[in-house]
Image 1: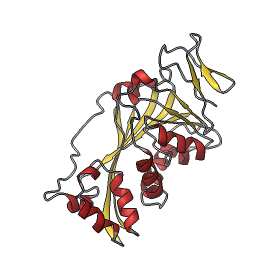
Image 2 (image 1 turned 90 degrees about the horizontal axis):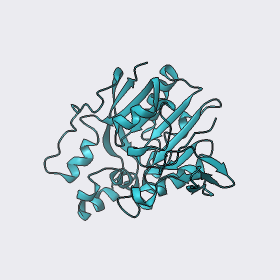
Image 3 (image 1 turned 60 degrees about the vertical axis):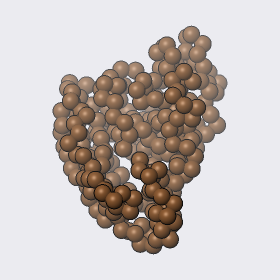
Image 4 (image 1 turned 180 degrees about the vertical axis):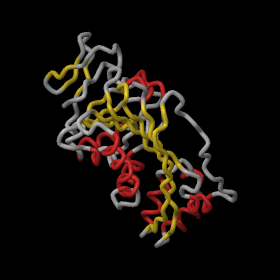
Length: 269
């Protein structure tokens, strides 16, 4: 089972010709040697290289592969097994370097990952070749209407209208957002008055909430490198002073809470 991409420029179906995807209007998108396709035309970009840069992507992969967020990966996989069509099509919207994406792949489903960061998609495509990765903007996905049985977003922008468009009737949307205490100990190193995350935001209005769960556990970060890698994954990394970074780099066994809010929604049939 392969994804049915549509042209991001004219919305016509894309077909494979040699090492490219082409539409009937001769718009062409090369399939890279790292097993991904770039479906983000230059006119859709707001900067030269949008999304995370290479250093940020490398830091996130190194951190995630240490297993610190594996309890979250296990939870969202369990929900997929319980509620999802495990022989259908799945989309990881904002997949980064593919840590969660590839863990959903089975022998019978089709798994797609999209992200605006080319460096992340390049790493994902090279390592997880059983999945289908593409550089895209979430605000204008290059997929047909009602194409996916399951869509999830882990710490990525939630574009409700576009997500609903590509979901099949009866399909599911799973979102992961920060709960109140997420990384509070790390934030306290940076801010004099570290604020708790706001859990009251309700971005999903047109779908039915099926399940909600808070996942909270204490992480013990083995090395200073692990702590700095985690910091680089956060939106407040640029607020950290060099003194704080130097202190964290020397830390061993830094304790920090992981606190996630996981919600599952269903599209009406």
